[in-house]
Image (cartoon, rainbow, N blue to C red; front, side, top):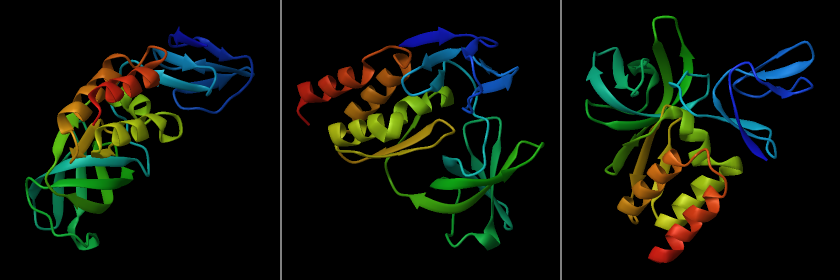
Length: 200
């Protein structure tokens, strides 16, 4: 059973390790306003900016080549930095990349590693707090999006998605629908029916 939770609300009468929570006195509490999915013991935040974690996958756009580093727009308060000598890919301003977070610091700089250039396609920006719902439990929702639209979709934890091929317009519509209805039940079935109607 899903329910809306607020910061400081008890999630469980025992200590459980999960994102957006803290434990105290043998209980688990929420740190965010969100939806608690008891079945999967997970929380979907309703709002919030992206806070980088090591090994997060992100999508970004190269803004500047400073010679020793590339500056990457991550659509967040954090600036992505790729150290040129550690990158096997030659980049240029305007390039869309998919990379992994190596580390970050108090200056709001995120060091990225293993950048991969993404050619063509379309960028969709969503609220980072809705990314877990777009991916779904064990990638169920993301797989539904890919199979239903026949598009190649790469999701960045920073809220930037790259979509290419298939029915991009339909994929975009479905992604935005998930963002708007992330807090509701039966969403996966509604998305599935949405694709069935179009017969892509």
